[in-house]
Image (tube, rainbow, N blue to C red; front, side, top):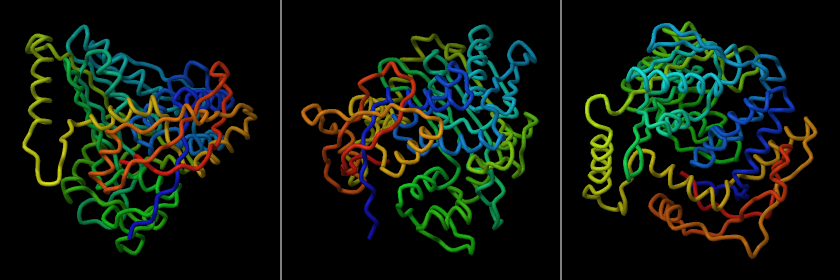
Length: 410
């Protein structure tokens, strides 16, 4: 029997962003850089990638306080060839280095059809999909690679060596949803284990092994052990590929030497590898978009296996979740809100997010409820929405509201 999930409270995206900007600014980040970082973190929460959202703030701030992450640093660019560049993150926030890297790749692709950027001396950049979306918003296809701290054994090994490094790519479409792939080479992303630990929840036993090599549903024990690669040697090989393209070629840490983002003992030295591609190199842009739309229609219109009501295109569930959470708010558990408020208190942020009045609270939309029914047969329930009455104040705190039940978890 699965352990019940913790009740959630809702906060608006606008107030989550104000909170992050305020905490970052009080910790030495410029307002321009804080806005980029906050937008990336809130995008993750909006898309339902709760493992890479604003709950990362306490671990980031711990690294800032220990002076192993430079809050004041801004990345710099070195143009290598007309279509190749390198960004030096200078041990600043990975979001900033990746944002500059993809912006540069996009500009090169506009002029020459393709742009490639290697990033060195960076840090964790959160959810890879936000970088893919940055390219899509500019009408570009993209590839986004990064390496990360040891979490996986190589196939046949027993100790952590390779990272659970996400593989991401995307392409714009016409009238249909764009293609957005963002996946880890493990059975589950390691952030999901951190999230389960934070929320006091169990994990599936096929995600990880404990320190003794046994299957476990305890997230704390799993973090002491190893993640399991998807597809056995295939997942292991993909994690090695991420290290080659992100770590070896860039001059950053590799081969098990990237520091865990939750470890405040030394700089992470993460490497990234970003490519932007102009989609009309071989066919016209109109033809490309029509072909992408046709691919979407063929995929979602495929014959369904027993028990499946709907087929989704890669990234579509997250895009639908974002549309819903922009209206209904982002769900957090009380322990997460308490941890975020502790960070706010440490830098003396005074504002709190206010929940909507009862008569303005709304029912979750059908898509999220459907998603739960197909996964766990639970019924949809009402949840409350958070908002701020003074959005102009950047010094925000996340305030707990009344308890509510879980209604969307992916």
